[in-house]
Image (cartoon, rainbow, N blue to C red):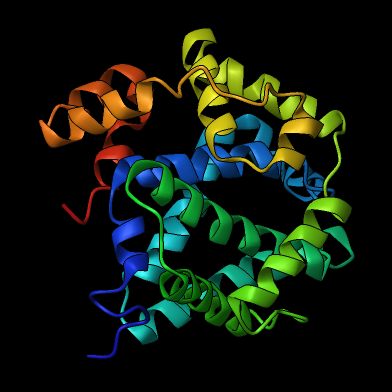
Length: 253
């Protein structure tokens, strides 16, 4: 049976633990709010109505690719393309190609940043492996101008951060929706979590502090994982409405 991502791949380790995935989720939620094409998801009304659910949907699609047989993964990617084409047809013009690349770039960056925050530094070879998985995803989506390796991607990523992000009315509204759906305390935890993993450019545009108040808590949280208490911590900190989805994020133990 051919897998889209090899069984012992570092990518499966990254995306197989709920806390790592939740940091990917948090960082992506911050950066996506700055994307110049975020109006596309406002067009359907689904993003402001359920921002947490929509981001979980993005994560679910990514995991459906990473943990699938090759044929099934390709079908999932094709399904994503079909959904977007339908929205384009309804609205009357195409989603910019750079917007697709930006979402792909986010998943690459936060996969690495989240794992390195909670686990250890990745080797150059492991970073290349992370990039390769998402590169193959992008190729299947027929995205143009994708760098062919991690080193070139870092240059493209820097250019993206400098040209494709802006603080807009959608940014402000999306963070307002995050707070509305999470509540004041969990929203504060979300923002502090985002500061831990987002690039400086994103911090500046979102007017975040440079350092997170959660920095001292990271070693403590790592200890709770070793003592198998992290499930209790997540139950307290995360919205009860998404407990089932969060529990299902744990694939690799």
